[in-house]
Image 1 (cartoon, rainbow, N blue to C red):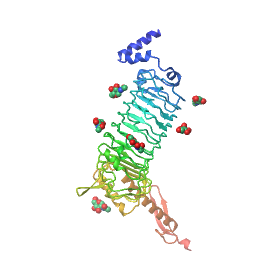
Image 2: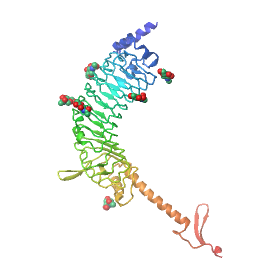
Image 3: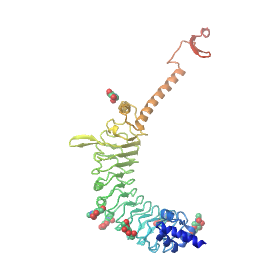
Image 4: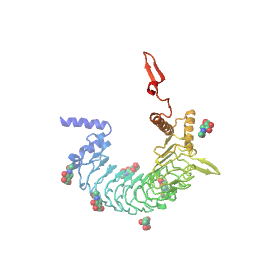
Length: 443
Ligand SMILES: *[C@@H]1O[C@H](CO)[C@@H](O)[C@H](O)[C@H]1NC(C)=O
Ligand SMILES: *[C@@H]1O[C@H](CO)[C@@H](O)[C@H](O)[C@H]1NC(C)=O
Ligand SMILES: *[C@@H]1O[C@H](CO)[C@@H](O)[C@H](O)[C@H]1NC(C)=O
Ligand SMILES: *[C@@H]1O[C@H](CO)[C@@H](O)[C@H](O)[C@H]1NC(C)=O
Ligand SMILES: *[C@@H]1O[C@H](CO)[C@@H](O)[C@H](O)[C@H]1NC(C)=O
Ligand SMILES: *[C@@H]1O[C@H](CO)[C@@H](O)[C@H](O)[C@H]1NC(C)=O
């Protein structure tokens, strides 16, 4: 009876066009240890394809040599275990595994050729381990790898040519490692790179040759939380044609001088957060970024003013301004917002909260601007309205409070004759208030 049911299922799958994979899965013996007890291996073919083998947080301390992952599972995750070592014999040859997740384990090193048997691997996640050393051949043979995450480890150096085989690599995350220096030839063989995360490596400068390599696809770069003292425009300039998104948060810039972003004419978004040393932004500082759409400036405790021409540039003797769409300047110490900083009517989103606004004549245009925008029917985002409302409400509230105090305590504002009082009489439909003088109290 049971045999017949299996047959029926088998036929149904063959009809659905998945017969081959099903038969392979059915007849091969999956790794017994993994799928019987320790990990979760979906029995349903569609689920097996979608979810792969789930060994998350199973207290696994080691992977037995010769791990053979059944072909039906394209991915396996060992995240959040206590795996300490891998060897070149850990994985049996597999051309079907596409995703391997070893994040949040206790790996301390990667031996040469550890992943070579997994020749089709596309995503390798080694985030949040304790890897301090990589063999120069750690990633040998991974010609199809598109995403590699090595962030949050203890890497102090990257051996020469370690990414040499990763010709398909599109996303590389090596942030949060104490690397301090990068070899200029590190990315010489990764021409498909689109995203590069170099945050918090302790970098004091970027070797110009690092980005000079053939990186014509690179669109997104993070250099956040390093120790750069100036915008590394000499290195970044080589990415001018492709770079769209740049994060330079948490660096040690004290000022942004005129034309700080030389050559980044295609940049669409720039993030500068937690700039704890930034004091001045000069005229024309952002002048190079002709296509900039989104600018985020946040958490800059010393930024009290911004030059009203910071977003201007001069082309053939004519001065013009950048046309941002989204502008954030918050959690800083700005006193005043220059009226001609940006062509405000073109903005889609503005966020200016938590600055030290001074409610003086320099800011009067803000109120006018809101009215103007309302008249022209533009949907202006909250901040201007908010600013005006807060300013008006604040002013009225303080005046009202003072008036009340004065009135109640001294009676200055509405001084009456001594002994005067109001008498209130209430009938069915009216309330009558009359001022009377009580002569009896004088007596
Ligand atoms: C994890 O494994 C260790 C031995 O390898 C054992 O002592 C411990 O009790 C296990 N913890 C859990 C939560 O299973
Ligand atoms: C690598 O990717 C290419 C293109 O996607 C594919 O044709 C090739 O079979 C893959 N290599 C392996 C070993 O799977
Ligand atoms: C990380 O590795 C170092 C040796 O490289 C070791 O001393 C340390 O205890 C490890 N830390 C953890 C959390 O395993
Ligand atoms: C970088 O790699 C080159 C070889 O490609 C080598 O000659 C040079 O010494 C390395 N530089 C550093 C700082 O390690
Ligand atoms: C640069 O990379 C592209 C693919 O992104 C490739 O077509 C081109 O040949 C490479 N150029 C050099 C000089 O390596
Ligand atoms: C406000 O706008 C009006 C025209 O809409 C203009 O006449 C006036 O001078 C403006 N006031 C300020 C303070 O800019």
